[in-house]
Image 1: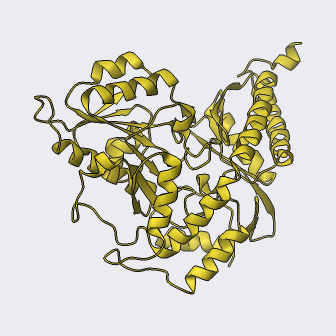
Image 2 (image 1 turned 90 degrees about the vertical axis):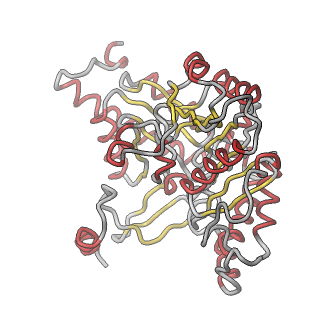
Length: 417
């Protein structure tokens, strides 16, 4: 089937929820994808962090084939062999006690919000009859469902669907004073991405996250961390919060967990888990045998990769910093491990760079208009980084020179020297 045929069919049949790039992918292996015309692409987006082991990983392929021939789905009214094993592995690496499995990141976040409200009802709230408020961050993104949107601090996502779930306040990013000002005994949870992903690859400051933990400890509120994009090895540790020495009460994960199959999870403590009982929450497809069997194998592979992720991420970060020194239009390099962002001086320039790299067979994307987002598979090597950095150097030079010719930008440092 041709790209033109697919585009025509989708325009007639699908809700217009994505502005897709005009590329039709047909297969992938390792860090590469191939389109319908046989062109090869180096994948530095990995399905927005989902394909963390790349494409057609042999361990994942073997597990899929084996489990698909045994059992794909069984109702959560019954047992299967894999949920407890997966929960055991996740709780061990997170330092938490209990798991709930669902289908996606936004469902995991919905479950976390419900659990926070349910837990608050079981507590002596020191005279606050309505301990139900949630504090979230400006510029955050937690998903597309109503509860997730209610805690997403970006008006462009919220406005079309208002009014949303009430009781949410938004704190300025990394503003400790604003957090303290808005926090009181009516707050049942502080809701944070350890590193904002869609918000532009922006890590929390240690002071901000530690203050949030202290406020929760003082009042019995819960600290909920969204690690759907930054968790499960992306930063070179199992969880990004492990860089900070702070332990959450609830953490949500999803994207890479089942290596491309839909699977999300929330992890929590025994104490907080007591807020739920049978019938309060559930899922039809979440935690099925196929997805859980694959997730177990993903975590086994991940165990041996964290050092490589840290080393390759440090190398990539340093190379991007060298481009910042060379090109005036690069404002900042942000992130940890293999979750990195390059903030440029204009949306037009960022869009042009993404397009030029796509033409050269390299996949990245941009977020917050001006930020180039890099979420490559964990299996990349330094040679792949070098290829991407060379392409970025060329694209940045090209877009800089075009802006210089139109008089809309300052000359580069190199031209001034």
